[in-house]
Every structure is written in C-alpha cells, then in structure tokens.
Image 1 (cartoon, one colour):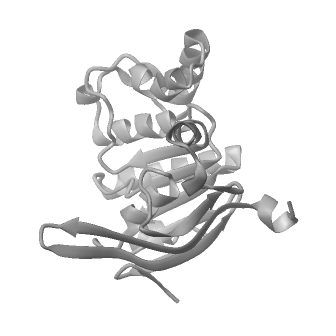
Image 2 (cartoon, rainbow, N blue to C red; image 1 turned 135 degrees about the vertical axis):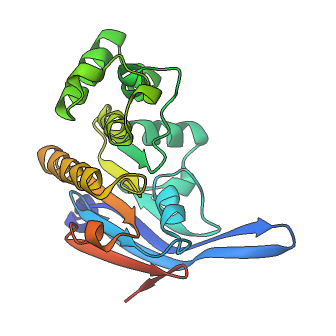
Length: 229
C-alpha cells in the first residue's frame, strides 16, 4: 500500500444515486467524486435537496449507490457482506443527525453506551467510557436524564458522545446545528472541532449554513447532485 492509500480514509468515485418515486425517477447524485484524507475536516455545503444527506449516507455505508464505488480505508464497501459492513459502521463510523435519533426510553448514559453494547464491549467498560464522554461534553450531571428532559443542545451533545463511544475513525454529521439556535449551534461546532483535534478524527459535516461551513478548512459545494468547482 502506498502513502496516498494509507493517508486516504474515503475515496468516492463517480457516485450516482436515484430513487424511484411512483411514476418518476428522482436522481439525487450525478457523478460525485471526492477523496478525504485521514484527519481532514470537510464541510459539504448546499441547499436543501442538493444531495448532502444522501452523500453522507452513502459514505457511511447506510445506503448504496446505483453506480460508482466507495472505498473506506482501502476497502470497497460494495464487496463487504452485510455483517462486515454493519460492524464497520459500528466500530469505524460515528453518525450525528439533525434529529438526534436518541431512544426516548433510555437515559443519556444508556443512549451513549448503545453502540458500545452492540460492539459487545463489557458493560462496565462501556459505562465508564460513556460517563467520561458525557462529562467531556458538559453533561456530567445529566447522565440519568431521558431525552424529553433535555434541551435540544443537550440532546445533540448526547448524540455526539454516542458517536464517539467506539472511538471511530470517521465522524459524519448531518446538519448537526439545524434544530438549534445560533448560540447553541456555535457551541456544538466548537465542541466537534475540539474533539476532532483531540482525537485526530476525520470529520465531515453536511450543512446549508455558510457560517458553519467556514469553520472547515475544506468546503465542497453540492449543486443539483453534483460538485460545483
């Protein structure tokens, strides 16, 4: 393996994605290619419907392209079995969504520890990591609170801690400030930037917010399913 391959965590090649809706076909991505190095911080910017979320889902193995290839750490995702792909997502990728996606019946600590439990991390070890992460994101006193007892910003902090519990190589954040006020959104981006630097994690944020995008050293504009040069 050469140095370029070793330094590249994601290599997307000519991705196409369409959805069949009733009597018509909706083409969301039309030949998207990009390369992401280890430790990079990249912002995907574009209007609603430009294909940002779809691209993130493809890069994280949550969906498959109709055409093109995605290589993650030297592995072609299309060649992996469903079990191997699920384990890769669980251990190597942390997802942060605009809608948080916390389980309402679980408290903050239980939500954070869920990916670790799926990875069969011993319960005591998972709980210790979860408490450390919740303290790191400023929620040391909120570990036993359920999502409906937390503010939007606090729920997003829980989601960030959950994304980090298995120490992933890649964080994919889909509009992580979209449901937050400006001040809280700034705090969330500050936190993500700090955690990325501490852990040397690759971070990709999809956003329509120009202010959020300016925090990233690299910005890619998606327009009508294509990267705009």
